[in-house]
Image (tube, rainbow, N blue to C red; front, side, top):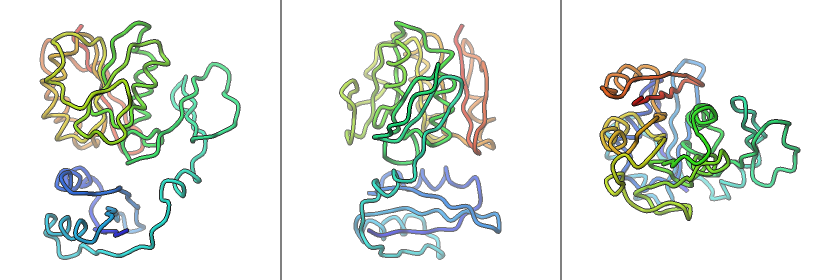
Length: 255
């Protein structure tokens, strides 16, 4: 494995991810430093992949290290512990044998990148919003669903859930490879999109077209909240905004 490391200021992560979205990265990791800066690590399976990313960043301080290969998911999962999220969720690592607390819904976390695996604040913010918004029988869409954890949560809440994603890797059976453009207008009761701010802004018109009640938008930073809020136009309005762990989520409604 090859690790590309770049020291950045807090809040610059979103721009960095945008610049790397077409590279063959295998994972992302960020590490807070004592001096207030952030060491941003990007993992690649090949040296050319890491070198291509370094060229895209055009930063003299990018460092590439070769790291002994290992089972990264297994090592990462070994550190996971059950998490209480919101009022209803009990998030567990795969294979966890602990008892589910009374009045909690058990949801197994998914290994993968930072967004959508269950332990990241953006995913938890989505789950917290969903526990009060999703109704039994709702048609639920997770746009950019990844491995499908949020769709799984919606199913546990009684919704008919499906997702879409342009990346076929690890796509769940109730999802399709494609974009929001393939979905019928006003056919979704509640939708969620947990992705970086630039993509939220780009895809919002499509999500607003297909969704007839509420939309949950997550994956943006506090200093990007004004941009996300400003894109919500009538008949839509902002219902609530929450922050957790340096990340934000917004709930919008058309009713």
